[in-house]
View 1: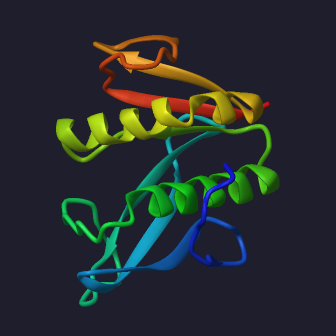
View 2 (view 1 turned 120 degrees about the vertical axis):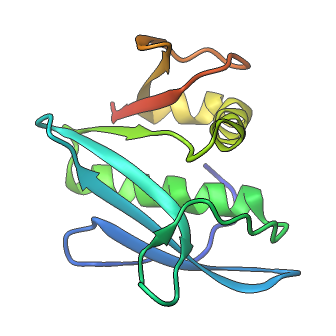
View 3 (view 1 turned 90 degrees about the vertical axis):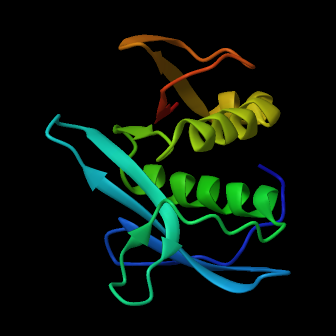
Length: 146
């Protein structure tokens, strides 16, 4: 995606990425984490504010820092970096709440023409999977680098 994004820092394995959101609410540290699931070749994408006490992800925090497109572009940049290193994996993502999943779907729909050039994308609804369609309610998303 040709959008402004924040500089990313990652661990050696490209499993954990960190960046800092800048906006009216100040500097907010964010974490993106790719975690293997019990299915071979399937990873979960976790994302949220960095909990300063535990160092973990707070995926229920609501930042409202006025930079959602830049944050989305940064998460997508991490997805590109992760799938550059691990090109044959699938990555699953869903929001911690229905409202957050809806926000993710809206962001994906907004930039879908760009995303589909590099990724195969499936969407989950009620336990079934289909090819992602814009402006359709989903429970989760599954992507793989083309």
